[in-house]
Image (cartoon, rainbow, N blue to C red; front, side):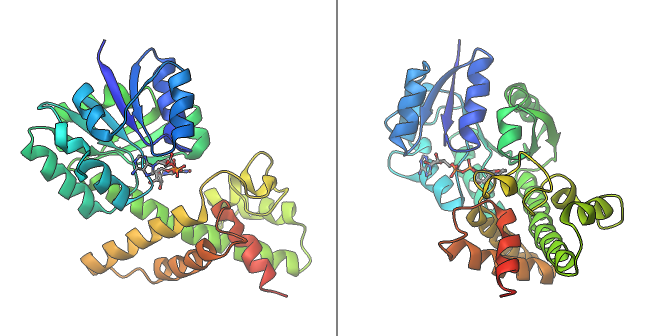
Length: 299
Ligand code: NAD
């Protein structure tokens, strides 16, 4: 049986890799965090010393890394994937990164007769765990999409073919800009309503049956106690960190500058999450913690 290469075993990648294992796939894995790779060794995976070892051993490779510099590094460093990549290899990158970086890496892979597709994800850590992720795929052609889908199907529920390489990142960046803006807006409205004397659950109930409803209000409400089992009810632990949101909003601002599409609310949301991502009180927390940030600024 062929071996799948997997690089980046964090909050998302760790669950995604385990879903491949559950489906009987053999994996060779790499992560800079040795504690994590030792856990995967104990679960029967081969552990690579460098990304180059992965490319030498596998013709289907998945990367789930924090951001653009990490992806560039894993592909182009001295011991990177491109050093040993085999012709016919399919590289699937599920990191959220700059569209320009996706296009650059795709070109470098093409020079080695390999393919690179962008396949960023949504659905959060729960979606990664339950194999219900949405993959936004820029595969370039239908044959490559179908080859990727056969693997992505084991980790997700909606595998969407968006056409050209880079289109996956475009869709993901737009979605997350909207998400960041909405989370701040819900936090602002909830805080205002509570300060006007409303009960938090009652206010959320009205919003969720009225025109203000959105995912941040009805599924991921940032006010503790409104919805159980989500980060706001657990001290904002786990979930989607403020620094990842700041990063995604910065990608939206780069895209906005490149395309000259105005994004004034995206820009303001970016500044707010940049402050959170640098503040020791908020930087390691889920992005719903912006509610606490706004609440504190009342004092
Ligand atoms: P994470 O920080 O938990 O995991 C990243 C992993 O990559 C870590 O294990 C880290 O050790 C490893 N890593 C970092 N640099 C590396 C390198 N040079 N070589 C090998 N491994 C390296 O991040 P995450 O939450 O899993 O997110 C991964 C990507 O998925 C990000 O681009 C993020 O924006 C996106 N995403 C995250 C969520 C979420 O809810 N967490 C949801 C959708 C998309």
